[in-house]
Image (cartoon, rainbow, N blue to C red; front, side, top):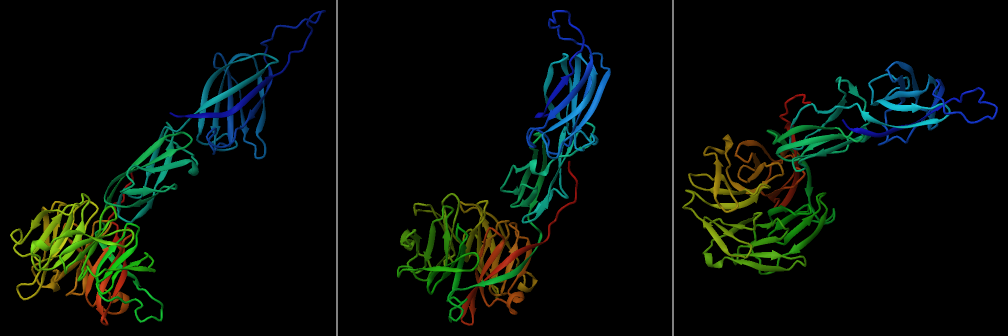
Length: 524
């Protein structure tokens, strides 16, 4: 049980004895004869020194044998700091107890109490007591409609205080302190609203700032099984009257910068930068050394790497927009250098689409591994994406048997394969016809552009198809050739549609969970 530091300063003044003291009027020895008394309570400022909900204090006085002498309730004044009440007659050794209540008449569940404080009452002398009271709260229960959430969902937690008799004790909401023991999975604001951020387990705690009693509730956060994607806007640049407004030459790759900017590679121009709102921020022009680029990537540290297919090289971009060659793969007999991604441990993955190779370099630019067609029966690697757990995903499109067939390959950061998925059936039955670009969103969904079917396929990280979407709901027609794709930390997806009226566009979509998958429970 925690302690409320100080409830009130209580002064009890006993009356003076009347009578003769002899002819010389010598002072008498202080008497212990019972007399009436006046009790004055000085109330402290509301806050840590007293439960904010306290509206009265009841004082009980008993003699040394436990017999009741008097009991009085002092209501908290509305416009003063003291309360005065009359007490019955008493003197000598006695015991005083005090109880704080949420009502002015001393009823309701007690908020704090202190029992049997011994006092020695001497007639004619003020008796000052500073009573330290204990909170009556013995436990704090945190409850919610469910303790299972899916990413992006929110719910309200409630903290309820109970005493030893399991009665609810009134608390003050602004004195309740909320915290999450795993902010990466779930956060909580100062009113108890929980927001699910990523898969895993999190414990939400509530602490009553007056009693310091603490309660907890454990949550499990999972990926929503049913989602849909709603059209938000189309990115563009230039003025409204410009012929290039909302148009690009060739949107081959889209990436989200560490600061949230949307970077769109246009092989005819360079990299266009946009704010998350869609405002055009400028273009980073490619030098003559970079030609036939089809992708770029950010490292975990924010370094930018750009692929140049013409000279089989990778260039880095510094803060002054200067490009420097950091990987020279010209000696590897490559056919068409295409995709690139980076891992948290500094490795750089490159794909040679026509050559059927995956090359892995370290941060120093040294080749550490080559994966080729001997590791897959059919390999035409296209693009990469890395999730927040360190897994690398690669699209692989094979063009045999009369129609293209797409694959997704899941790898560790060293290149070891941990899973693949595909559907060796007609694309009309849900198979990936042509796996193009790939992205992984903040909740682990794997998004693949399927340019033959003119749609985006959305999978779990284990390859379970969740949904597909296209542009029909947005502009009255499907994608022309969806290619580049990226997902930001807020559930937004950006799709590059190559070849709309001989130009390209970038469309922004928002993921919306359809079913939170929660289970209604009550957890104390």
